[in-house]
Length: 294
Image (cartoon, rainbow, N blue to C red; front, top):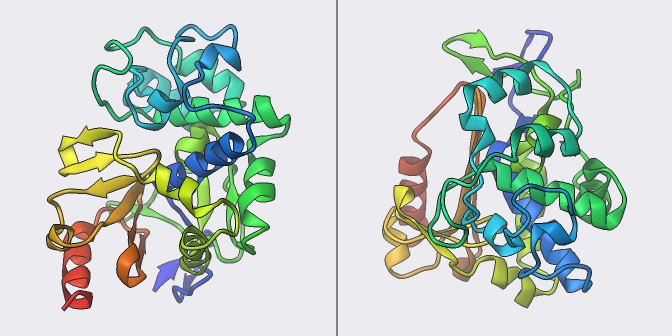
């Protein structure tokens, strides 16, 4: 059971809407890959080509996608976070005000997960396409895949929208557009299965270009994984990775925790969405993968 925003107890259904946090990054990397496929952008391009006034303009698109930019994570800054949770900003304002600090390390020299990277990527897509990021996602992904219950940005009163809880109390409500392409999407289990199926086909991008997103670019040692472009590729977290390629991305947004896992060789997809804080999503993934790979 779960509670909706009117605090009535309702059943958890396939179309119950959950914020998916950093799982949104898989969608942002797809938008960038589509732009590369259309010859509107290259992975080696620098930010300055699209945002000429940006302070860290020498950082490349590839470094943003693979978290090797050195740009500080704006959501790890308490002063920035308090404003993100209480204000309403455009992507350009977020990048200018919160994602323009001095680099923490030389770009390309190491891996450091930063939500700032994907906010910048979503702004770059706006500049290239000339539309709001919500419209870009809808036009390029949600509508073509018939993901009718998935949207980006502002959290609104919706019949199927789930309330998330932290320590037994409803979490604070904020404008999810403030986290941009790093975590601003709300979706459902049913729609995420459509997303999974699209990744196994050529509905929105040729398969070779999708595979490139899943190519390791850096080591993400905190999770015993590699990081590609918007995707984690497991090394040692799951036993099944000894024999199979496991691609995944978790998501966290206050009380919302998610897990999206794909094992392509057997067509396995695991989707877990929770609205009461952290849960043993990695342990559950391990158990499910082991059972399905018997």
